[in-house]
Length: 298
Length: 322
Image (cartoon, rainbow over the protein chains, first blue to last red):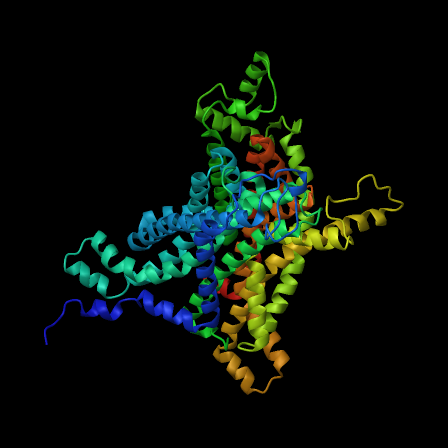
C-alpha cells in the first residue's frame, strides 16, 4: 500500500454538501424548509412568465380601483387598479435577489475577517474584532435607514447596505472556529512542510469552516429578506422595482387597511413569512444536525 | 484595573467610535452639507453664511469634526428646519414615548418568553415542545410591521375595539388624571402586542435551548436520582442555571429593539423615536436622522453595559474566574 500524503487531510475533511442535504431531508423541519424554499424560488422564476397581466398597468377607470379578488384578477387590484397577483409574482424576485446577493457579500466579508482574525491572531485580531463588535452593537435598522437616505434608493445600493451590515455575526463564529482549527495537528505539519499562510488558509482553513459558513448563511438570507422588506416599507425601497416590502408600503400608505382591502396586504406579507420561515427552518434544522443534544422527536 | 473602570472605559470608547462614525457617515454625502441641512428651506446668502459659521462648515473636515464634538458636549444636536425646533428638544420628547413602549413590551416578552421556553424545554421531544418551537419560528419569521398591519386590521378596523393611532385620543377631555392614563394604556395595547408577538420567539427559543442543555448535565441526573418532584427539578435546579445564557444572549434582543420600535411606531403613529426617524426620512431631514442614529446607538451601548454589570452580579463564577 502506498502512503498517501493526503491521508490525514481526508480523515479530517468536512462532511460533503450532499450528505448535509441528506441529513436535512431526514429532519422534518429541514424537509419542510427545503420544500418551501424550492417552491418559492420556482414560483418567482416561472410565475411572472406565465401570468398574463402587466404588474404596472394602471386600471382603466375608477371602477377598477381596490377591487376584491375576482375571476380575472385573482388577488384583486390595488389603489391604482393594478393587478395584485402579478405584483406579488414580480415582487418575489426582488426579495429573493436581495436576500441571496446581500448574503453573498456578507458571507465573503464575514469569512474573510473571521479567518484572518482567527488565523493571524495578535494585533490584527484585536483591531478586526473591535470593528466587528462595533457593528454588532450598533442597532442595524437605524443605520440602514441613515445609509439608505444618504446613498439613495436603488436596488444595488440596498443590496450593498444590507450586505455590508450583515456580516459581524458570521465573522465572530468563523473566527472562533478558525482559532480551534489552528490548534489541530495538520497546521504545524503543513507549516513544517513549508506551506505558506495563504496556502494553509486556502487548503485547510476554508474547507473546514465551510459547513459552518453554510449553516450561518442560511440564517443571513432570512435576515436580509426581512431587512429589504422593512427598508421598502419605511419608504426607502427602489421606486422602480416592485418588491413585497414596497407593496406593503403602498398598501399601508394608500389606506388599504382602513378600506379592508385584505387581498392587497395579505399576500406580500404571507410571501415574506413563507420565504423567511423556509430559511429559518433550514437553519434550525442545520443547527440540530450539528448539535445533537438539541434533537427531539420531531 | 478593576472590572467597572475598565468596562466604563470600553463603553466610552464605543460611544466615541459611534460618534465619529456618525459624523463621517453624514459628511461624505456629496455636495454641500448645508444644502442638505437646509433642504426644506429657501435661505438668503446672509443666513447661509451665518449657518456655515454656526455649524463650523467654513473650516476643514477636521475642524468641522471638532465643532461637531464640541456642540455634542454642550447637548447641541443641531437645528431641524423641517420641525422648526432644536433636534434635542424633539428627540427628548420622543424618547420618553419610545421608552414607555419598549419597557412595557420587554416585561411581557421576558416573562412570557421564559415561561414558554421552560414549558417547551422541560418537555423536550413532546408534541407540545415541537408545537411551541414551530409557533415561535413562525412569529419570528414575520416582519414586525406586517404583524402590526394585521392587528390594526383585526382589532381596529374589523372589530373596532381598540385605538390604532397615536398615544392619546385627539381632542379628548379628561375628567381625571386616571382617565388620561387609561387612554394612554388603551393606545399602548396594540403596539405592545405587536412587538411582543414577534420578540417573544427569541426568548422562547433561547430559554428552551439553554434549559435542554442544563437538563442533560450530571447534577440534574443526581437531582433526579434524589427523587425530587418534577416542579422543583425544573424550576429550582434547571431554570436557575438556564437563565444565565439567556441573559448573555439578550444583547442581541437589545440591539434589535430599536428596529422593532421604528416599525411599530410607523404603523401606529406612536410619537416616538421611530416615527421621528420615519418622518425625517420622508422630509430628508438629515439633522434629525443623524442625531436619532447617534442617540439610539448610545442607548443600546448603555443598555448592554447595564446587562453586563447585572450579569456579573448574578453569576458568581464570572468573578471567581477573574
